[in-house]
Image: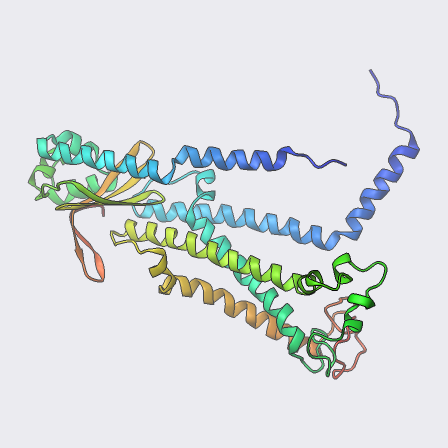
Length: 136
Length: 241
């Protein structure tokens, strides 16, 4: 009996579709760079609504609870540095770290795109980054 | 329109051939089928656990198809594969030289080593139905004489490599989620996470082999080629049921 030829072809196609749906690593890095640059531009321009829209839900919620005010007001009270140019981007799965000249930003992918999970982060030896804003 | 009945002579032998094929290959078919079922179960449970963790960390859950392409699923699968192939590679290789008195897993005492060409039916001692490479009397015989160990060893190394690649990606994804710096592949090879995953699998495989080699000295399973015949003495070595 001849072996069906389409089995392996379907498997390869399924993998290709899945990979292309998630994007290649370089595409994801480009997307993250684009989104973090847009976040920094909004920060420079003081566009608080855009900054809040770029935050991950848990980060936004944590910010509002800590400040006991709406995100648009609370984010203006944060001491987020002027970050400068992007130096390096690390993307693993749905998580990313962007190291800029004067800041480090963490991002995660959500159904509506990459969102900032933490910003204003400084490295600490043997411990997680210390961040001005982060999720709970 | 009613289909004309198939001639009895055409279907009966075909059905008989299928049944005979299933009976003669039931061992391989059973394990391949249960492997696929277990892998599917692992994927379903792993997906649920992964999403629980994502939601607890304030992230969005992912679909089942997306989970199958994650490094988290990849490392969970490959860390077990590598240890299983290492187990078989070591067993195949170690039983050439090492013996266990009274064990059906061991060759007879005094037969340690690669044995004579006559015992192994190679070169001029090959039979008419021997594999062609067993009779070749050149490099092909040398390669074919070690092919089982070579293939098992190669699959082990490739699975271990895959574990390290998927492992560093899964580890770094977790690091970023916890606002910690990622590590490189080379750094990961010296990390506690890599060796914890590796050694927790190795120890269980080695224990299983050691207990099989020793328990089979004293215990029996009637009809199993992995056991001595029920009435064989405890000191009988290299006897299979």
